[in-house]
Picture 1: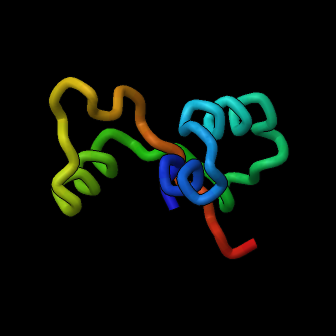
Picture 2 (picture 1 turned 90 degrees about the vertical axis):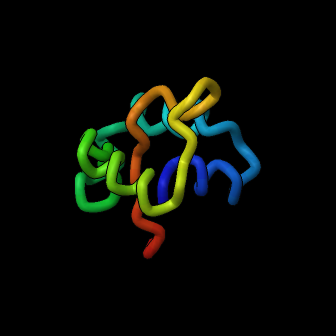
Length: 68
């Protein structure tokens, strides 16, 4: 799941989820949580028709494994 999906699921703002990840990065193994590369994000945007205009995502999203 990408960070904004997790935020919606738990009724938080995406920036709060990302802050938590950054502040506790040692608790999130790379297999569980990682940040997309530019090319991965561009590919994802093209698959889901995400806006790249004003109001779109400014930073690369985190991906979190939901198989916990």
